[in-house]
Structure formats: C-alpha cells, structure tokens
Image 1 (spheres, rainbow, N blue to C red):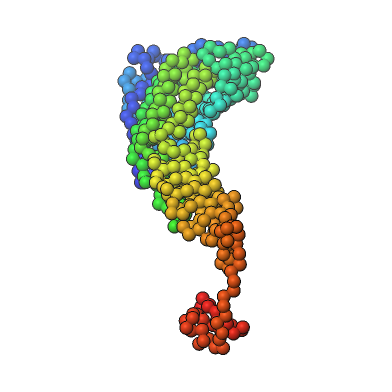
Image 2 (image 1 turned 90 degrees about the vertical axis):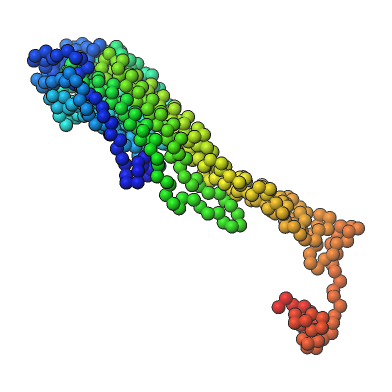
Length: 458
C-alpha cells in the first residue's frame, strides 16, 4: 500500500478556511425560521397537490464575519485504488455544518467515485455518492434527512452520460436530461419533487460547496507534492549469471515527484471545476435534478485527464503492460521486455522476443535467447567459435564440417565428394601388460583384451 505521507503514516495538511453561515451581510430578520421552501427553480409541491414535507422549527443564527474552520486531507494508494479524503466544517450559532468527502479512483478502469457527507449537529442530513466511468455511464445516489424535505432517497443513473432515469423514493421517472429547470416526471405523468432546503441552510450549503472543493483541491495538490518514501527493498529480481530474463520495475514511476505533481494538478482542476459549478447553480448544490449534468462534466474531465497522465512520459517512461489507467512502467532509460509479464531490461540491454535481455552486440535468436557476440547464431542455437553452422533450419553446429554434413570423431571428410568416410582402425601395438603401453600413452595406456595398447582418459 502506498501512503502519500511521511514515514509515520498518513499526515494531514491543515488549512485555515474562512466560513460563515451566510454569504449575505444583511442582519437576520427576527424570527427567521427554517421554513420548508423549494429550491430555486423547483416546484414547492407535486402536481397532485400533496405536500412532500412540513415546516421546520429549528433556527440557525448567522455570522456577519467568517470564522476559521480546519480542513484536513489525506491521500493513500493501494494496488487497486487511490483514496483521497477531506474534512472541514462551517461554524454557525446553532451548530455547524460538517463536510466529509472521499474521492476514490479505481485504478483498473479509471472509475471516479466521489462521496460527500454533510452533517448538522453531528447528524447526517445529506449524503451523495457519484460514480462515473470512462464510458460516461454514471450512478448518483443521494439521501436526505430533516431539515431537508421533499425527498428522502434518489438514485439517478445513465448508461451514456446523457439520458438518465431516476428512482425517487421508490418511484421511477421517465428518461430525462439532467439540467437546471429539467421537467422530470414519473411514469404516470406526475412531476417528480425536488428537495426543499430552508433558506439559511441553503445559503450555508452553497457557500460550503463553493469553498470546500477549492480548499480540498489545494490541500490534495500540496499533499501529492510531498516527498515520497523510497520503495520497499527486495522488489527487483537478480538475473542469473548465464542469462538475463528481465526484471519487474524496481519502483513505481507513478510515485516520482514529477508524476505526482501532474496528477495532483488534475485533482486540483477537478475541485475547482466543482466549486465553479456550485457557484453557478440556481437550483442550489443539494438539488438532485440539475446537479448531475454539471458535476458529470467535471468527473469526466478528471477521468480523461488521469488516463492521459498515466501514459505520459512523466508518469510512465516506458509502458510495459497493465491497463490504460494502471500501466506497468519501466524506469526511465529501461526498456520493456515483456508486456504480458511486465518485465523490463536494463538501459544497456536489448530486449529479445520477450524472453531475454541481450548485451550490446549479441545476436537475438528467433526463440528469444541471446547468442554472445564472440559466437555465431545457427537457427535457434548458438555455435561456439570452433563450430560451423551446417544446417540453420535444424540448428546443427558441427566441429568437423564436410559440405552440408558433419563428420563424427571416427570419420574424415573426403573434400572431393563432401562425404564423410570412416577412418582406418589404428595399428595394434602388441602388449601383454599395461607397462608395455607406457612408452606410447604414458599413464593413460592400457592393454586391452585383444593384446593392443589403447589410450583411456583416466
């Protein structure tokens, strides 16, 4: 597991953020209540005349000046996913809005899952989970609790990133295009309700959605720019002295500082995109009808940017297998030997058909083996300096070539016919005991059963 922090675990980068309960500087009117009103641009009630919620009595005071609230982020990465979190809050006279965001990137396919939770008085009142894939399909699940009224549970899904359907408290809608002012109706033709947010909470939530993503983006970019710990020892594989069959990448090139800064910049752009979108939403950041279409554009831009970055020279000097979103990369200067096995050759070596890494000057044989420069190739074998390749198809190396034939140790070549002929048997040196053979063969001479001296290797 890779942790973007120091050697003692995940560190938090704390930012001072200024928040107030309202973006307005006008004094609050006496008795201003959490009146259940529809989000701007949304119907207060469904077409059948039934109200979807009741007025609330809770009251939130306002600050005319911003108060400091801490924001902390973490970044952690495993072999399958990158997880980022950010926590902050907005203090109010009558409690605080607490923000928790978890942004998860699935490394295998680049799916982005952004999960935001908002609590008031330490009680969850809003939770949304947006999952967007590289093919533009998405699913957004949102849950509301008092003082947010009108709807409780909504699931918006799309197979193409354009036309969507929703499941609103168990009722299915007709297909629609998520956008501000969209007329979303159930299958029976009745209009689907939008969430209703009390005005003070609406103002506080809008400010929170405008500022928190920017602060998160800044924090995450700084976090990913921190120096990374060295890779654990024992990753590389030592090649055998006789041959070099390649090695896996000795470190993760996506942890190189240049790559981390590049990836951090993409998440920074994503956070600012969300903040800018929230600022321009007339329906409010908690609405479920108009938000998906705008937030989707930010998510798809992030997915596309991460895909390009993963294959960039900063993050992947030499791609060697893996997927588009999680490529296996050889270190700078190294060459890919086998994408299927994710093996690399050192900078001074030459890959040979996915099997071995050859030295400069060696010959790469068709079966993926290396033939040293001092020797010479013969089909799929390598002949030594004293041999001649007589049949490249069969891979025959011959110490006694004779045309296209190879003579044995008991044969000689008749160069006039290029035929191997049997050598005449050696003359018999008569003997009765081993000592009779000493003058001819020394200690290696023996007297055989036929009474002839012969040389033995022992």
